[in-house]
Image 1 (cartoon, each protein chain N blue to C red):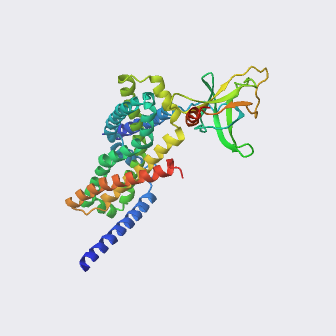
Image 2: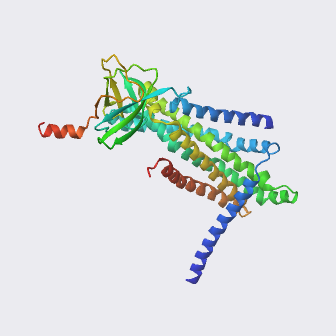
Image 3: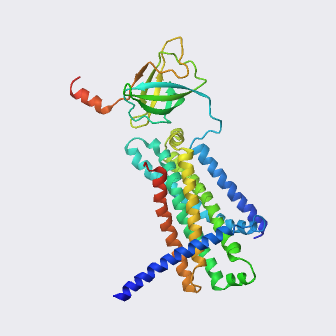
Length: 149
Length: 260
């Protein structure tokens, strides 16, 4: 085969490889080409985070509005302190909203749902949620039920 | 008795000597990087032989492996009522493990054996030594383009394998078994991470490509220049490459995904 034909075929092969990598990036891993959105940080303290993990999602009314940045233990209160980054365009979360840990489906991953309050003031950068609701612990639920509480 | 011990010792020395030869050989080849301009046509020709011609077997195997993953995954997951997780299962298995590993095994069988036989025959017909006599370095002229071609082609093949496999899994899962397409892709996208999963798979395939190509060209270059020697070198290429790929896969997986 002529050298030129071989070069063209190899070029196509490499283009196919790049295209496949692009498919893996965009379609399979859901990497979005837009630059990192601007976000602001909120905190919430939970008694029990259950199986919550960093990079988990934060949603309002089922729409994803942010991600979990990190989870650490507050040594003063022995509560878990969750750092969340919320998209800047969602800047009017009422100050008395509460953060609730929910599970998607029966066995799905856990995420934080923000249930909206009615306050006129909204949460600002670095604020902490006033009220939170921890993960539903099936074992505790059953033992409470068994002991008749 | 002493003869037995002596033969054991000879075996050990042979292994060590061959490891040393392959190391020196690799050093010589890597020093002889194909020259950008004059070496380029050689490299392109080898990428064609090693990569493009392996495309058919890689695409067909990827398609069928993805389809089997879809069927098996559906059977297991539907017991738990979570067949929508099938997308994430197919994508993670392919991108992390099966893509690099199966492609490397196919690559060793399809391209590695051909490289060994070709170089071995060149050695047996004394083409390599006549090149040396003409003042052409066979490492640079014959071996280096083949090694680099394997190195370049293998990650491309592995990525194509993963994409075709995921498409095959989608064919079975979504088109045939009726999993909802939105949750198929949505679950996949929320669980596959580009750097942690896709790029680690690509790194694996780069390592495998390097090892397979190295073993193939070394076995060819180091073979006994007879027809029996070439046949045993070709067998060794496939066996050693497969073992090296599977062993290295465990090590790389432990480093990348194991929690230490």
